[in-house]
Image 1 (cartoon, one colour):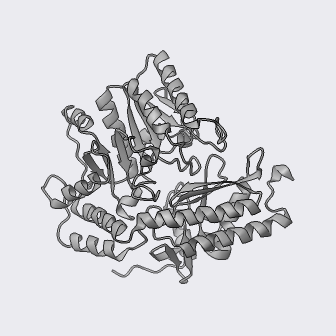
Image 2 (spheres, helix red, strand yellow):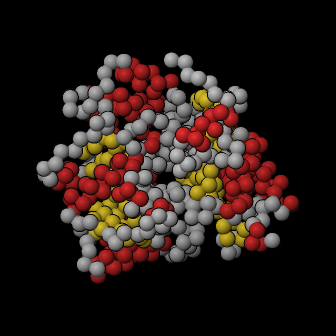
Image 3 (spheres, helix red, strand yellow):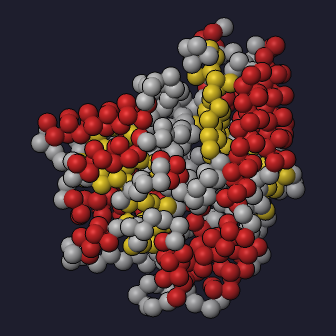
Length: 449
């Protein structure tokens, strides 16, 4: 089928007429029309190439030929639901199990990270018999109603906080309650969760689960203090709840040193439930919940069948298997470790040169660059960050975006095939833009003028 080719202006006009305005565009004042992609590169309708620094969904690279071929071959053979026996789903579950701690041995396949987190919430409630959930401030866990309710990033802008939702301080050692100079920030932040649990109990409520991204992304590309999660898990377990690790943005080798970001918390730490999504299908809708036999048994014993029409279908699972193959064959986890370390080193050197760079943080190919107007006060440089993002796109065709509570963190979560040369290009471009902004005063926020 030959699709009608529209001019960019026509595409934008039709989108404005037909698509809900809540579906926001990048660079809304001058959107980019992308017509093809390969690896870490995007191409517009004029053939101009853009370096993609944020598509963590396309984990092993856009339009990877191995994944395209595997999907096409399976689509031409069979695609049906999981009520029929098929090898792909069990082989895929077995491969995933090999990457996880032994007790995480039961898998539920779904279509999106939101579905995975919603199912994790159901599992936790069925297993514990409790309702209340503890989450981190600024967290985002998905777009379903149940997940908006446990996502402060969203519910603070909408209907507000539900009675059964409780918010703990985010463990941000740069601008949070306990900074990097605290003697034991992991314990201090874990104790804030203990305090929340005590407040829950004073209301005669009971904790069902603690939900946390293994590396908070919307919260500002944060790295949790090592030892935080095991201490929190201890408090949560004592309260009769379970620990849910949201790996939807950070799993599958992105952190470089480990396959899962929760493993950064120490060899002995194991969540009770792990949710995964975005990178699994390299752009194909594929997600999963991994949990223990005990939690799965409680879910089965409720007498209600769980069925997902498309979750775990043969095409999705062969894509998932091929993603794992590519990660291994191309050593993409090792690449994330090496290139990520180089990118962080480059940004650290820029920090010495530019006062506007307040903090450089990250691990593997999960990196944040926090901009400030005053290093001592750590005042967020929101406008400066937005300007850098726009100029990177306009002048160097580099695609990045901002995150964090103040949108002052420039985030980097590129495809795992990102190279040393890509890292150097990004650092060079940011250096040039910041150098250009400093003498003109453009790097100063309005309130400081």
